[in-house]
Each structure stands twice: as C-alpha cells, then as structure tokens.
Length: 353
Image (cartoon, rainbow, N blue to C red):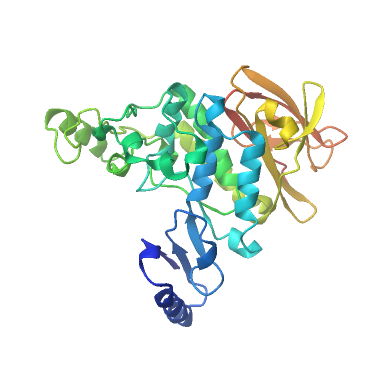
C-alpha cells in the first residue's frame, strides 16, 4: 500500500513530517511518493517522503536519446556524469524507491517524443526544464509538435528506451497505455482514453474530434487517438518485466558505469570522455557475485550500426538473452558478448540463472 502526493512542495515540510508519523503509525510499510520535478534530496532524508516521481530519469532519457542533432544532446560522458551526480545524492535504499518515469499526465508521451528525431525542436539539455515547455509540447498552442501516430522506426527506437527505463535504478512506473503504443502531446492529449480491445472508445473519440471539435480536441482536429493496441510493443514490455522479476540485478542491483567495450579495434570505458566519439553509452547492474544485467545504447547518427564486443561478468560459454529482441547470444571464454547495435537502438542483456 502507499500514496502519491501531488504538488508536494506547496505544503510545508512540517506538515509532511507529521503526516509521515501518522501514516507509518497506521502501517509501517506504507509507501509515500512525492511529486517532485527536481532531485528531492531534502525531502528524502527519512523524515518525509520515501521516494519521488523521478522526472530526472526522464530528463536523462530525453537528453541522451532525443534529437538527431548531436550538438544538442548529452554526450556519453555527459549522460554518465548526469546519472552519477543524481544517484550519488541518495542513500542506497532510497534509490530503489524512486519512480523511473518516461512520461505522466503532466508531460507529452515519450513515444510521441521520438518523432522529434526527425525535427529540430528539442532545446539544448542545459536549458533545464525547457524540455517540458508548453509552447514546444502542446500543438494547440501553435507548436510544431507532431501529434500523428509514430511509425515503425519510432516504435523500434522506443523499445530501446523502454529497456533503459526497466534497467535503470529505481522502480519503473509505466504511464497507462505506453505499453500498447498510445501516443500524444502534452496535457490534455497525453490523457486520452485508454485503448481497450473490447470497447472501441478510441475510434469513437477520434471520429468525434474531427467532426465536432470541442473540449476533447481543444478545437484542433489534428488531435488523434490511438485506435488499437500494439501487441508487438506489449510483448517487449512483458518480456522485460518478466526478466525484472527473475533477475535481482534489474530490481536491486548496484549500478556500475565502468562498462568496458571494444569497438573499431579500440577498448574503451563507456561514458569516459575518450569514448564520446562512439556515441555508445550504458551501464552494468549487479546483485551479489552471480547476477548481472547490461544496458548499452547506440546514438551514433553517422552509421547504420556499430558492432561492439561487450565485456561482461556472465558465466563463460553460456548464452545470454537480449531482452529487446528476445534473441540468444553466445558468451565467449572470457565473458564477452559480440553484438551489432543499430542506430538509435539499444540492447539489454541478462543470463538465465
């Protein structure tokens, strides 16, 4: 059991301290999650909230994955520094109570954001909260944001972003409909009706939107509704979530940024300044001495793909599973996995126990 507290910062800290004592007195294990758009360090000291809606994880995803203009996005070393500077500010057990979010009722849906790869809309990451500027994310305010259905390329790109969400430190929270491919710009189009196979409501609302523009559409007939569930995308979510349940590394593992890879005959540490030219970034999650997971993403736009040899701590000569594709990969005598990662694609490896 637990409770999410909206606009947490608008209520005095003294009240939240009393609130915590009262709630924990009723049920000690009840979880308190605060809406906080920043780091929330001051409210996660043990006397207020247990965790926050971790919008910083979303910022990391936006700043690393989105925008084809590589001058306007995080380099691998910037992504690593951003990640470590945030996570290192929390106590170890607190990290796992952070909600790892890609989107919410107050943002555009991340699947829609992938269309930005074909546009020059995204601001530079150092501009901070301007990622969620209403003039950028809301087509009803005249922005160039596309509210069309993302295509196959966007969906394949998004699968790798889901792998990031499910492997990052924290508790992944899936905004309703993301798992079946719902898309939409910022509020209110991110709050469209859920797609249910047996109801057909989405098609009804889409027709109404075009023929009778009104409050649902903000007098904007370009606001379109998801009309059917994407079962292929759902299968990816299910496969990775199943793996989270089976592999402690994905749930509670420590994060290690010193991931060694060999690419173009160079052996480098992912996220080091020397590796920035590769546009490869990732990390290891480890739990104990026998449970490991590896995430690696390729954002190099000048090549269709990169072939990488990933150094792991997997058991040698025992296959690993790549969770985005569901494919098996051999692990060599030295614990290495060779994989070709397409442009704007990511991989997530585990090894069956």
